[in-house]
Structures are given as C-alpha cells and as structure tokens.
Length: 152
Image (cartoon, rainbow, N blue to C red; front, side, top):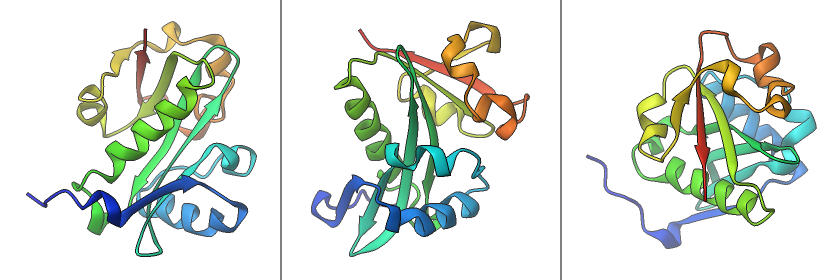
C-alpha cells in the first residue's frame, strides 16, 4: 500500500483558465470525457504537488442538486488520498452553497464512491435538473452506474 502523502505536500485550489490544459491531460489519462469542461471549468478544483498537477475534480451545480464529475488522479498518485481529498473539497464547497443532494456517473469506481457515502440508484430516480447535464445527455454511456449522496 502506498502511504498517504503529507497534507503539506498537496495543494487543492479552484481551477483557473490556465489549468485547463492540465485538467484535459488528467481527464484523458483517466479515460474520462471532456464534454462540458469548457462550460463548467469554473467549478473544478485542481490538486498540485510541488507545483505539478496530480488530480482534478469538478461539479455542475444546479439550484437543488449537483453533479460530481471528472475526478481524475495521475496514475502515479492513485491510492494516496488525492481523489478522496478532491471529493471532500467539492462536497464542502457545494454544501456551503446550500446543496445537499449530489449525483455522479461512473463506469468503474462504484466501490470507491460507496466508501464515500454514495449509493447506487436507477437513472429514473435522478433529479430532473441533473438529467440535463452533458454527462447524462451522452458524455457518459447509458451503462454507467448512477450514484447519489444526500447530506442532512
């Protein structure tokens, strides 16, 4: 098992326009879609270690719910807590805006997100606002697992 990194080594900040190339690279390395990135990059976070982008994660916020999307960690940094910290920061950021209902689609990370409190649901249980997202409109395959987290 790879040890968790020292908290001081990892810096998570809101993405800037200058981070888009790094975000694209991280998404491509993780075989994640780029659809909707241009419209929603302002809701992305970037994780850096020693100035190098090692992870990213984003969200699409709607009035009553949010879609967590594009959680990507550079292969050599997986298993070290980067993704967990990105998800936590995103949930905290969205919760501060009053959102308590979060959705995501995944093709291969269901166990990972279950450990973070997300539960598998059927597509017909998704908040209609989220269904309008690019992820639900074709960026992710219909075979993707849909998950929801409701925070009280």
